[in-house]
Structures are given as C-alpha cells and as structure tokens.
Length: 269
Image 1 (cartoon, rainbow, N blue to C red):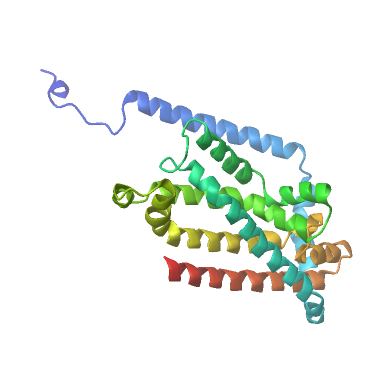
Image 2: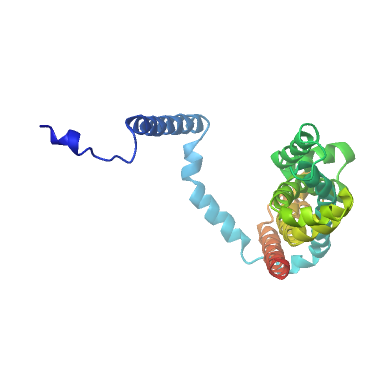
C-alpha cells in the first residue's frame, strides 16, 4: 500500500501558486535587466568613475562655509517661510471641502461629486510642487505668488486625502445620535463630524507645513522665490562656500520645523 496516499504532505503553496511565484520572479529579473540596459545606453561610465574625485574637489571648495554670507540669506529665508506657511493655508482651505466631498459618509453624491473630488486629489498629488511652480512662473511670472500657489496646489491633494480618510473612520454612533435630535445636515457635520476629525486635521496640516518648508527651499530654482534663488545664483557662479552656507541654513530650518511639527502633533493627538 502506498503510504503517501494515506499521509499526504502539507505544502505552503499549491503548485499553481508556486508556478505564479516563480514566473513573477522571472519577469522581475527580466525587467531589471532591461532597465539596466536602458540606463547603460546613455551613461558615460568614464564620468561615473571620475565622480568620487569630483565630489571630493567640490566638497573641499565648500569648506570653510562663507559664514558672513548668512546676512544675505535672512530675507530669502523669510520668503521661504512665507511661501510654505501661506501655501499650506491656501491648500488647507481648498482641501477641507474637497475632503468632505470625497468621503463616502459626507459626500452629496457618491456617483457624481465623489469621483470629481477624487480626481482633484489625484491631480494635485500627481504633480510635484516644482513642476507646479514652473508652470505658474510661466503663467503669472516669477516671484513669491507663484511659489505660494504652487505649494497650495500641491497641498490640496495631500491634506484632502488624509482628511477624507479620517472622516470615513469616524464613529457613526455619534452622527446618529446628533441626527436623532432633528439636527440639519450642517449641524450634524458641525457637532458630530468636526469634533472627531479636529485632532487629525491639525496633525495633518502641521505635517504638511513641515513638508512644505522643505519643498519651498528649492522653488527659487525656477524663479518662485525663497532660498532657491540664492542657491541658484551661487551654483551659477560656482561659489561653493556660499552653497555650503545655504545648505546649513536649509538644514537648520528643516530641523526647527521638524521639532515644531512634532511638538504640535504631540499636543493635538
């Protein structure tokens, strides 16, 4: 008698699943090889081999940083903070109604309004703030306004996505209790929905502001104001010690904004 038929062995995967797994690995390796070949077509490896020496040369020119140049950075730094803060406020103002239209439990229409809101969220998140700034500089001209609007447009999708997910996770019992009192739709949102999402809203907004501090530092590279303008000017003149000073200011600004963001999120969450 065949004992294997009496004591069948257990396998983690079925033969079909194992075959699909190996096919997946095969196509992954094949895709990696194709990508490597495409990358090698336009790569000049002589430059790549020389990269460590070039990096060491530029790094040597950066030190010591031009500490006296910091006096030229205070105004661009202030512009950068304004771009990040005002852009975040602009994005949040537009994100709030979009989030309520996107959430399944607050949208006026799941069939028509919600897809439109989701399209706005995806459109905002799919375009980088630097690209938004490049387009806006061409439309409204260079300056802080282009940077503020670019940060705002980029922030809408981020804030609205996280906020509508928070709206969908609220306790519906509180909503039913307020609705049972005969409250209108606006009153239900005001007394049942908003109090539940308010901590998440503040946390999301401050987190986005922290991200926008980082992004606003480079918008000046395309003419949207801030520290990026000074960085672009120093790079154009190969003033590497000034570039090092700008990097130090950016690093300090990001560290402080991260600390503020963490403290605010701890306070509201």
